[in-house]
Image (cartoon, rainbow, N blue to C red; front, side, top):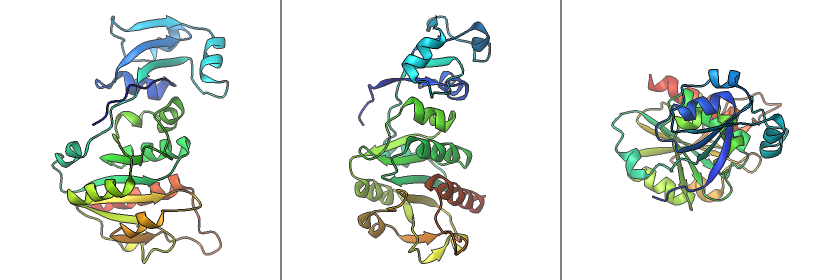
Length: 242
């Protein structure tokens, strides 16, 4: 398994609190705008480097659009999850979410947040045409980056095969789906595959699905944002698992 050496600035109260509570996070420095902000965070270990910075530093370093709330952490990206780690989870019902070239970090962050809410065990993405772990992704995930491990593959077809080998069934979402989401009796190990907005899943990905599923929508407007479609699908699996 490859180890991540990339470092970046995570910002915002929710992501930073979750990262500080995660023992697997390697944090180098805490940058804060005022003592008031520090009071909102978990107690910091004495060994952790801290420094106060002004609005100018935050704007210049993170960009003026960043909703940082006066807190940033310089840290290392988490190591990706390996297939053996997933295989060792002993639960009859498991959900993983597989993204086929969904590249917008806001969408992927929202999907990670939903995945945490509905107990997904991992998010699978490719190395290319998928966002790196960044401040934007972490902010969009609102702390859920610490709860849903990411698995990264050079080739999505290989990822799907590895998941099938450890017992996962693949449910792809496509407008050409042969059954409606509400008709599917989800149980066991479930892989939900979502394609990029507009283009959807690639043909090879579709071929590797065990089932093609579609959402029931109004005839006049049938397309949803990928993070909304993923949320509906994950909720459906979650309710069937219970």
